[in-house]
Image (tube, rainbow, N blue to C red; front, side, top):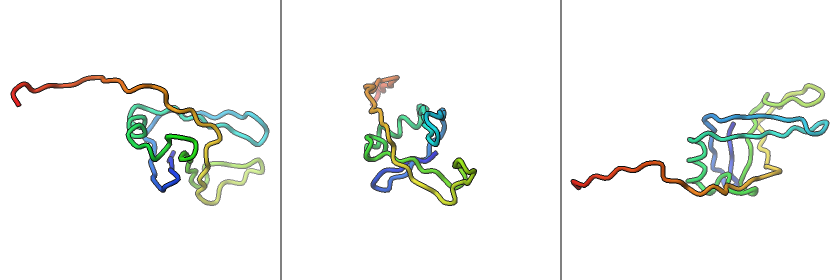
Length: 101
């Protein structure tokens, strides 16, 4: 899965969990739970996936099939319909100190 920003920044997710749900006929919700590496990258880069205006999902050809079983013929960028902002404050996990420097 590749995320795109409105300014052309591109980032391919390294892992995480992707799930889908059929909410309405002809409509599918894709939910992506990020892993630690992807979360760190996105927190450090506020030009991509930091709000609904700069969050796009890049769908390569053949990754989706419509109701008539036609697959995507070209890569499509889809803007998010729903965006949940990160409300988790950063947390220090560890540090080192060199008293000889």
